[in-house]
Length: 425
Image 1 (cartoon, rainbow, N blue to C red):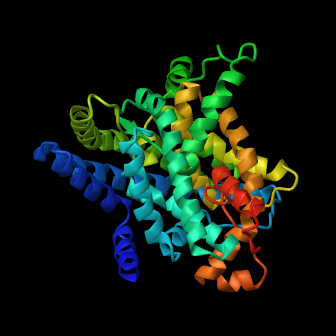
Image 2 (cartoon, rainbow, N blue to C red):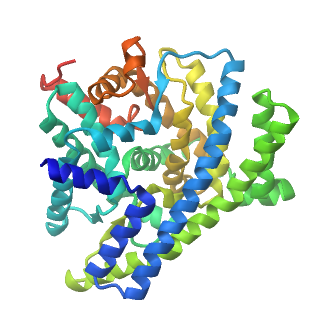
C-alpha cells in the first residue's frame, strides 16, 4: 500500500498540465483514436491549460492584494485564515489518497458498465476535491477508511451531477461530449440549474438582457472585453486606494486577462474535442450507440466573455457579503481564485447574462460562507494531523476556505458521519 501511495503521490506531483495530457494520451490510444489526433490533442490541451493557469494566476495575484486593500479600508477583520487551494496539500498528502483514487476508478467503471452513469471519470487531477473531503472526514472520525468511503461517495455524487449538467455545459461552451463533475464547480452549476428558473418567474427578470454581447452592443467601445477589463481594473484600483501607477498596472492586467484567457480555452478545445469525440465514437460502436461523457477539468468553462466579466464584479460582491453576513468568520481573499470556475458552470443557465450570473453566484456564496465558518475546526484539525500550519494552529488560529471548507456536499457528508456517531471532534 505504501508503494502505491508513493507512486500515486509522484504522479500527482506532476501537476494538471502534465497529468491531463498523459491521461489523454493513454485514453486516446486505449480507445483507438487516430495517433496523430491523440498526440497533437494531448499536447495542445496541456499547452492550453498551462497558458490558462498562467493567466488565472496573473489576475488572482493582481486582484487579491487589491481586494485585500479594499477590505482593510472597509475595516474588515474576520477570524479565519483563508487557505483556499492549500487544501490540495491535504488531498494529495493524507494517508488514504491512493485508496480514494483507485476505488473511485473501480466504482466509476462499474457504474459505467451498469449504465448507471454516463460520465467517464478520467479527470484524475480533479479527484483532489474528493480526496480533500476524505482528509477532512479522516480528521473528523479519526479513521482512514471512513475518509476513503466519504471521498469515493463525494466523487460518485459529483459524477451524477456531471451527468445532469453535461448537456448544458456542452451546448453553451461548444464542447460536445464532455462532462465537468469536479467539486464545488459542478455543485454551482446544479444550484444555478435549480434557482435560475425560479428567478425567471420574477416579473421582468427573465427578459432582462445583460449578456456580454448585449453590453458590448449597447455601450460600444466600453463594452469591448479589453476596454471593460481596463475599466473594471481602474474601479477596483481606486476602491483599493492605489496610486495612479498601480491603478494603471491593474487595469492592464485585467484587460490582458479578458483578451488572452478565452484564447487559451480555444486552444484547450482544439486539443481536447478530437480526442473526446474519438472516445465517444469508440464507446458508441462497442455499446450500441450508447452516450458517454468524458470528464474534463473545470478550467475548460472559462472562455466565454461573460465568465470573467461576472467574476471581477463578484470579487467585490464576495467581500461585501463577508462583511455584512452576521456570524460569518471568513474573509475570502485567497478563495477568490475559485470564483471564475464556479461562474463557468453557472453561465449556461443564465445564458451569459452578467447580472443574472452575479445574483445567482451571490446567492450561492451565502451558504458557502456559513459552511466554511462551521467546517473550520475540522479543516484545521486535518491540517494539524498533516503537520501543517503547526505554529498558527498552536496559537489558536482556525483555517478556512471557499472551495473545500465551504463545500455544501462535503458539509452534508460530514454531518451524516456525525449523525451516525462517527465523529471524534
